[in-house]
Amino acid sequence: MTTLAIDIGGTKLAAALVDSDLHVRDRCELSTPASKTPDVLRAALQALIEPLQAQADHVAIASTGIIREGTLLAINPLNLGGLMHFPLVQTLKELTGLPTMAVNDAQAAAWAEYHAMTDEISDMVFITVSTGVGGGVVSNGKLLTGPGGLAGHLGHTLADPNGPVCGCGRTGCVEAIASGRGIAAAAQGELVGCDAKTLFTRAAQGHEQAMRLITHSAQVLARLIADVKATTDCQRVVMGGSVGLAEGYLALVRMFLAQEPSVYHVQLSAAHYRHDAGLLGAALLAQGELS
Image 1 (tube, one colour):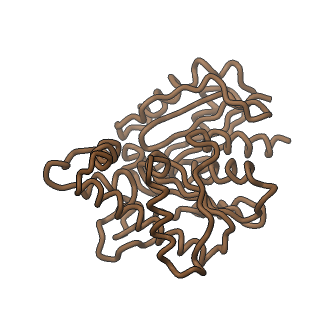
Image 2: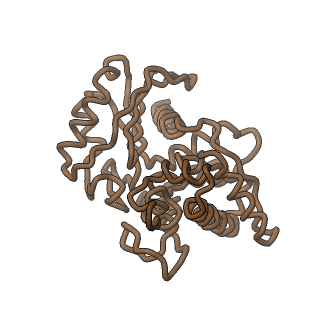
Image 3: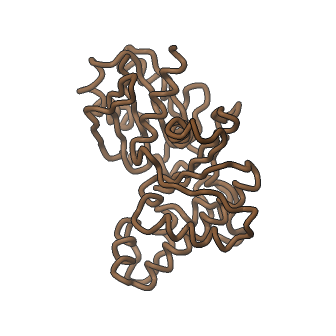
């Protein structure tokens, strides 16, 4: 059985064909459209999947935001071009004529990463640091999604009550400070307008402010991980996302986590499936539903 897996993020849209052995082929990407109109997102998704859909048996979607009864609800609308309510499953059914399911992208990635270490652990947490900050929790071998789809949205826990206002409406969320968008928003002076990728490049060149911004992000993530350990007692935390997988970032998080009391320490690792974790997790979940 071949799955057309789709990953919808704040920066890019990705799609690939995934077989039952989790082999990924014909992967393709587009930039996430900046427009706030559902019609533009629909058109982008249609262009993305057009070369692949004829070879698929069903569709599995991993998307940023809350997925509730097949509908995308953007907890932080800034991360998806201002979309608040998009009929994701229905749209892909109409475009492909295939059975379709959808799940939050970090929840999907958590399931893929758990699948890669299922012989070792039964409790783990996945955290993605990218345009936003998301998460997925596997407890006793089960993926937690929650009745409203909110489970695992760790980026919207509190980091600083005096911090910046988050796109979700709260003040001082982890996402507002530690995400790629948050890092870029805090830049001052000559770094104003730089994106996170540029700031990492400048930090590698020794730019003091860029280094400080990235270090602060890693410190906030380490505190989040300590909170996660306290609430879930997980055996492993896996990091993913463009920021989370950036060179040197995980080492910074490890350093700050080591400064927390030992009861909050937990093994950290980079995502085994790297940037394909969301695609593979969605495919795994869809195959589980159909088996």
